Image (cartoon, helix red, strand yellow):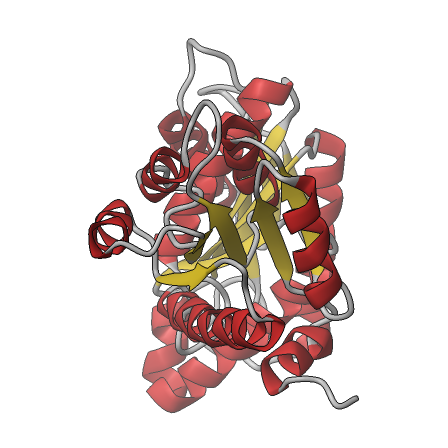
Length: 325
């Protein structure tokens, strides 16, 4: 049977949509599992506490939620999900035997997007889920567009700020290292003045592509930080891994052989890189990681540019130059 177009969109991206079914009656869970198992990864919970935990952990695309359950009822679960940052954008559809109008009104007040009555018709429940999956996919695309730099296709500063906060707390919790690379195109103002702004835009696109090709893990975040400055945020990465990535960036940008006649470094486009790598603790904050990576970048510029500098305090002077001539 031909798949729904929205399902096909997920499959083209190498994904399967995820559905969380919450009901204290296993027979209802099994029935809904049968409806959706062909196209969805179906998660199941039989109480409100488990539903919230799974929603935060797995970020399902749609939640089918029973109202009447022991302990936390569906209203409480929906309200909690709606007030939790990690889950507030997940559409919640109530599946209930309750038919009174005030039940529906209260459900919408707590954040539900739709209602399905029990006993449910498989065709209706499937159609409702597909409708809200389509809307969610459209909203996800819009949110992603708002987080992408229009010129380079890398993430923008807003996404960087979000990722820095998230990864800082993740590495703090896991007690793992977090690396940040700050990069700046050397003498880029001169490049613009000499070749024109259209050529400057093209230069930034090619530099951004080289950076993206140099960062190999899906968890790493590459951003255009501002102007000709870029940032790479790398969770669970130590100093050795961060320096290896920085070295790839220098090498790949040199391989572009983009002419830069007015540079004091050499005759092609180069970048300077500053690195800070730390294991977060309660005495530190993410702003310090950023500030020290920026200081390391400044030291690279002071030491001749087209090099890597690893922050090790105010007297840091570790510089690895790469010949680009």
